[in-house]
Image (cartoon, rainbow, N blue to C red):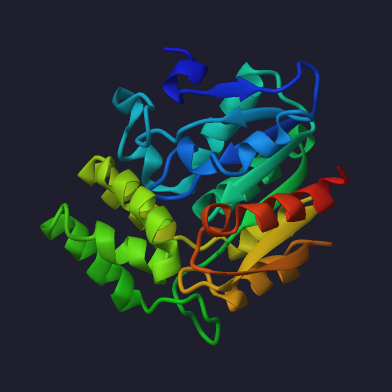
Length: 265
């Protein structure tokens, strides 16, 4: 099976335009960009895809050992870029895909022109004065819940990602997306996401980088975004006045505007 088919890659926008590659976070699929990506199709070659195990990706391509770390996901991003001959790519990565984008750019520095990291965290676990947002025991409890109750973890996590009654519609979309995940893949991806530590990888980023940080985010708090900004050479941060972890769902207009300012369009 081709890389394009494996990841259900979708390409829109003018041929020859600068590629803008959108990478979704844990529990989601490419549909999560429906409020943001179309705004860029007039000027960019917009590329959407599903990580292996998500959306309509080829589930037979999933290998638990290979995908035990984010390195395999980053390799997938590079394979998509190579298959489509994408160069000077603007990568927009949400949540864990922010770090997947970092790993991909460090591995192939000439492939990318800019990174937009939406709600990034290089380390979700609190560690020696660093506030990542979770105690180690919190992550252990989440993974144990995913093992013991394959349907019981989605709503509590969706509530953290999209809190507040004003976000109930978007939270419903997210909860439905979580429910489509195969339980074993969801568990493994959660472990790779929440137990990883990519802080040392940030210094290797060599392209202009924008950190888009939600004002109130319990998954990736301000301290996590600030660390990403401070450790990536020359990175800048914009704060979006919204709650939760998915500004592309809760504040798409503001997210689009911030990306436009960064790419100079």
